[in-house]
Length: 188
Image 1: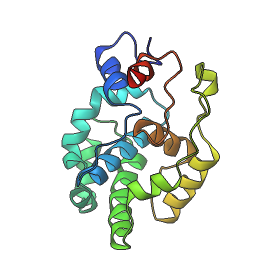
Image 2 (image 1 turned 45 degrees about the vertical axis):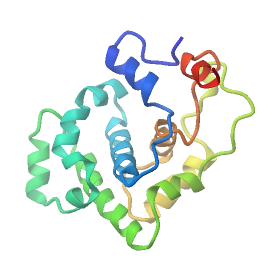
Image 3 (image 1 turned 90 degrees about the vertical axis):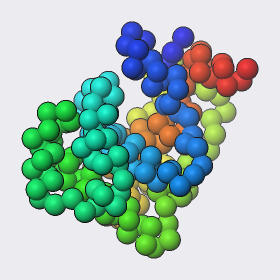
Image 4 (image 1 turned 120 degrees about the vertical axis):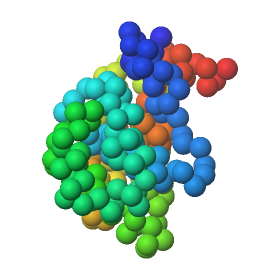
């Protein structure tokens, strides 16, 4: 039994193979984290499935979420993105993604990483996995602190809910339900 995603192969694959799994260590971590936090911001107010269905178009439009490429985007790129029917065309979210790429590079210039920020704000492990969705928070004290630190570093569109969703997506927290097949396979 899945926590979510049943009925759509794309959503099922995301749940089974990606959500809640830590990213592999490597040079690509920051790009992958930038993609995840960007997509979580675009999801705000929408279904995650909408974002998943547009993910490849997002990757193409945002140059693979290479923070160096996105940080160099101009007003012409904003116009291009707002005309791209393949992505979610929300000016505030598009401009926030560009600003966040610049903030990420500034973070790197200070010797910090997005991975490090996430790790610093990881909540303590749960004593027991959530039994049902009502036990899964949408935000925590840790996600409030992470969002505050991100905003202080120049990130935009990163409130506590987006911060927590990012923590969930990249395995900083494990919110798979106790009855979830993914949790059972991790024990096996």
